[in-house]
Picture 1 (cartoon, rainbow, N blue to C red):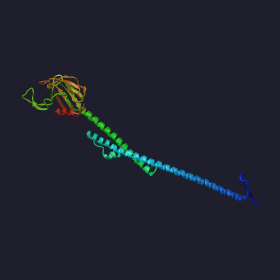
Picture 2 (tube, one colour):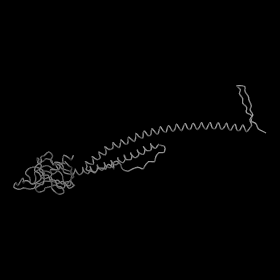
Picture 3 (cartoon, one colour):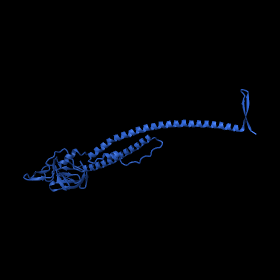
Length: 307
């Protein structure tokens, strides 16, 4: 016996009523087909919606990636410009090292910088082009960082050299100990001013000035002697270090004492005519490593040393 399923169609608007009788297995097949059609329609609609969403997302990602690449290109150009601008610092470094008689930093060292960073792993979310630009940026920035560190190191070396030079220069006799006064009898053999029948070696430089005129220290140093020294009369010696020593003779009055530290241009005594002399003046000597030398070239250095 075959089971039937009644299907009733009713339309009140058209006063319609109809009853269909379908075998049960036919009804089941029909329901399965309708379900399949509905399911397929839903799946296709969802798939199409997903494809549309994916396409929109891809387009958005492409736009974002293109914008990122453009910005990376601009940043890369800016870094390259900074590298070119840094060449001015390299030129300045070379000038400073030339002035202070220091060895140049080799151009290859500047171009490579110092240090180094490991290669960055590519970002999976970025395109090959974007990753390439990023890696180039990492490398350029690392080199620029190295250049800055190298310049800082070089500047420290130059500063140390400057400080050592300035310290040395401050201890080298280099000014006229009686400023504005004419230089008199110089270093070398001359007719003795007292016994005019004799030719004697004059170991210093005479600078004439009225009695009581200030005498200045010609460089930084420590007073190593004050007192009466035979023909020198009242005199004082200053030990400047680095092998330099100066002597100031025929003084009227000494204003410092042994062991005092004096600075260049400090008043240390006054002009007199003590000892073996004929008139008030300063007898000025420069000793280098224990050897008496002509003081005049050291006075001429006053146009180089800034006090």
